[in-house]
Length: 382
Image 1 (tube, rainbow, N blue to C red):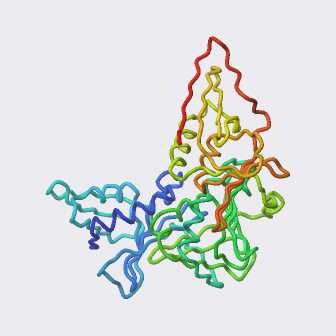
Image 2 (image 1 turned 180 degrees about the horizontal axis):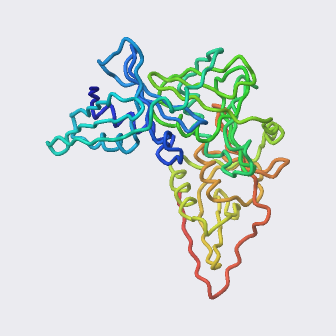
């Protein structure tokens, strides 16, 4: 019998379910592999492209490795136990027809449930990687989470459905969906690779993103897998094959025209942009009033909204249109927006080297207000 504190199980399940193994169609993949070894107890899940495991604090050890499977529904039932209690797992003796007895205390009463998991021998093997380890600070994974939202989710653009780890310029992370591009300096391995969005999502969990990590890259360039280890947690993921587009040709030379939004106004501006929703596909930025940025939009019913924000300008910024959702995300990177350049784009950059580029919407025009239409006007006054 193995007893595991409910508190530890809840933390482990919160991390493991980032892989969404409970939704997989192959029955054996709807399980958690529990391994009892001299190192303690390890729980692992996989979707064949990713392997995610976590080691639990445990006083239970075994002289040799023992494996058994915990069905997803059994793990979900176990974490519903009373706070401060433990969940007890007891495996049957027949490995060909396995059974698992879960005993958990709920509302002060002991509840015992029998499950019939798949045989442990049918669970996929853990991918093997042999190579060089690169130690990375937690700032690398924090930057990864910040730029990841700019990666494509279009299934027809597979190579862009992830984040590029590039050793160029001392190390960079790059993400783009073709309409915007974000980058950040970072310590990365010596050989470039593209990490898929699903793996990036796992690394966004605080078990990874709040501490230093180590990246293991196989010496064999044909190996598809990368390993990320942070404390007792390990993620092994398949990289995306192919040559990443030349992002460098999109990054413009310095743009001298800029608009700086006061820090105390930036949260309100971001909130307003996000409140517009899918009904508004562009916002026009103009400078009719000295010292103010005017943002104007028009929805499908021809109702217009205008927001005026006090700003500090440098140079003569052009009138441009952007997707409000993308503009809001770009302003998360910083308060200074550079407008123009040879590709007619917007760029938010920080002294730290993080940046976000936005392609302007060339098909957007200034809203036309008809007498019968309502007008909504707001201002973030100085």
